[in-house]
Image (cartoon, rainbow, N blue to C red; front, side):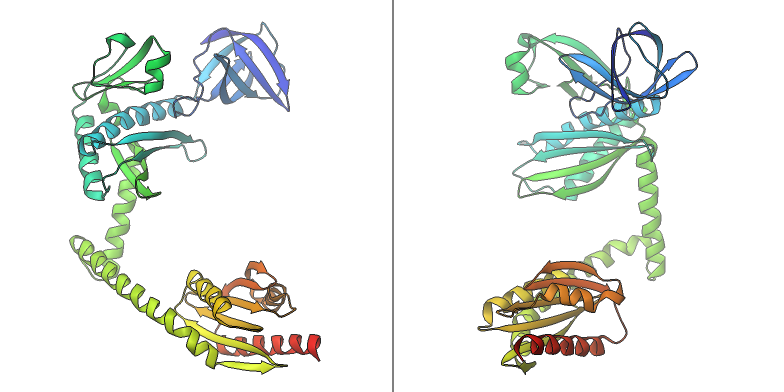
Length: 403
């Protein structure tokens, strides 16, 4: 599109440009903005962002050269980005309506339709709330229906309607009903009508394929649902499918037995969780029997095999509450890595600083406070020797301040 610059402001190596007409769309309604280029003669300027200011479309532009009021420029849209956002947005309408059929009290709180310029792929996210538990059975049913509608290549119509003429089957926010006289409707043939100002495809078949990629439960009623469309969705599905096939082969199972293996794994994990809880309840008693006394200050030390950092941290804090008087407790957890937790009470030593210095040659990572420290290293072969040396280090440090 050929156009002219109406206003231009240069700030921090960027231009804020207002055009007399534009093909670029600013970010709105959860849909990311367009990007592309402005071309002035042989000079190319990159449109890196598009914003809305007082109802006007402002283009954030970078490039070497000058832009001035009255300059004639050519708008070149990043069509792959725009078209992906269009497919994501139409798919989101169909997906939400399909979920709403199964979850009557469903509410759409937020949505994000984005495009990664480096990876050249799009991603959609809807934030929903429902009092009914949302499981993969419901999601798979909805996903199947979305792909059925895509396969049927239904038409998408957009039109302007007076708010007073809207029928009950139109999805629209209450805030729009109160402040708008007219709204733009996006209608998916024989399936959904919704007030929307975003860009959409003309037929559902253009979406090609829809795939839910993850579900994140935020609280009892709130969920983040992520999805992809088109080739991005196909690539995701193929990648996951191949990974499952390879893993099934590597552990000696057929692909159709993977669900059985996962269910068995889940039961074992729950059993292990229960055993760990029992272990965490008995460890403090064992730790209190495993100690050295240096100048009337006990140094407790214990190797907790198979415990994660989170569990060790819980154990360390439990010891601080349970043990009366001054003390130092050194806990070492061994799993795929080695984790060190040191808790102290009433001892004038910075245990975090001491532990960091002690593990300096092991490429340690972590941090803490003077009375509580958490550090991790790659699992060494000599964990017991390392623990004994650490106990000796604290024996020496205590002797320095109390001798």
